[in-house]
View (cartoon, rainbow, N blue to C red):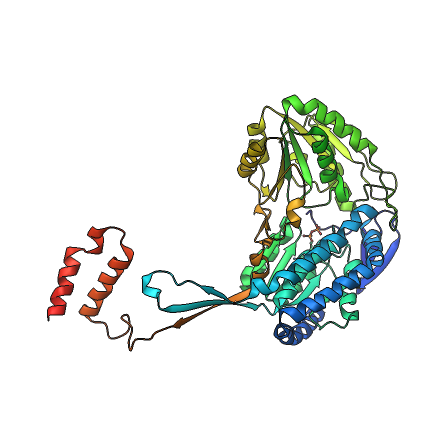
Length: 524
Ligand code: ADP
């Protein structure tokens, strides 16, 4: 994600107006919630949470199922709001329903298994007579703070797991795109669901008030804001999970299916106008395939249709940038690259009207350029020729980010080997983005791309819980060896026990001095 931008909305008194980046039209407004408002909402949610937790997994799943149905029934209305506030194409918007509802189903279907008490085998002989159970207890109130790139999908990627864990959720959508999410939360209320999900609207101050009011924070957004939230969470001693920016590298080997690789690059780089944390941000192509790859990529980029179509029209591919600031960042990266010797082979300009930037292909780029090092978050694909895949890995790993990446080759073993060498939380082989939909696998950022992970099977819902380890004695002796009073004899028996149980060789197990003194003591 990139820095906060405020171009398509303006704060007047306590209202925030939202406008469409494609047309400039005002499309709605939401209140700016103060910290007092945030505390009031948090208090209401907290009051309802114990009953929600007590409902149990199956009944919670029923509510989420009804909400999923409501989302399907209102998908056109929701996606229209998504489009109006973000300026994206209908095709880009459409995927938000798919992502959101799949997430609801996964956590509803699997929460019972993931949250059940876990009986764990005690470790070591000394604990053989213990019964050990780990149980999961929801954080009462989870804050979910989201950016503007997927107004609906982004909150829906995280909130269902938190709700299924039994938490109440206080969400804070981006000030740039609050409308679709506001409607979705209204949907939760309209179906009569318990009062455990709400939103507050506003900018950074409202977000900061959320961090101060909750017991755990799930944040998606820029590194700058993520760091701020991490610091505040540390001060409050609450856990946080941060999904931040990326500079995902795509490595194309000469043996790859180049048509597929080019199509993957085109969609992976231009989907959502490049405003995806895991979008393809830079491409490294092995020398023998470079010319063919670039020619095909330019052809595909030039064929893309740009604009904002409407409901189920699918007449354009690439939509607008969500904010003027974002458009400026993209233009600045292209300008910087060109000033340092890069060539623009497609796009490279903004449209005259609306916040559109043309799908852009850059070549003759290197790592001195912002477009190869900083998150562009826009429809640009800088392509670099590399000697071989090893060279590509070195360049891919020359980054402060480590969110994800992709490798393209027809050699399966080579694909796996290269994937293992990339410093990233996820690598897709011969595809892009697909890791996000593998709910059993974690989506984690390395380096400055974040802390913690979303999804990841059991760990993806247990992160919204506190753990409790219950340890019971199956047989209780009158006294434990460790208890008072300490005596030399008990001390020696303890030392002997430590050696017998812990040492891995006979000499240390039966250390003579230790044994003798124990025998002496026993003879007394
Ligand atoms: P972007 O510019 O990509 O939206 P940001 O990280 O600036 O990325 O914003 C992501 C979300 O974080 C937004 O909902 C924003 O209002 C919120 N936010 C901004 N500053 C803070 C803060 N200090 N504390 C909590 N949330 C914040």
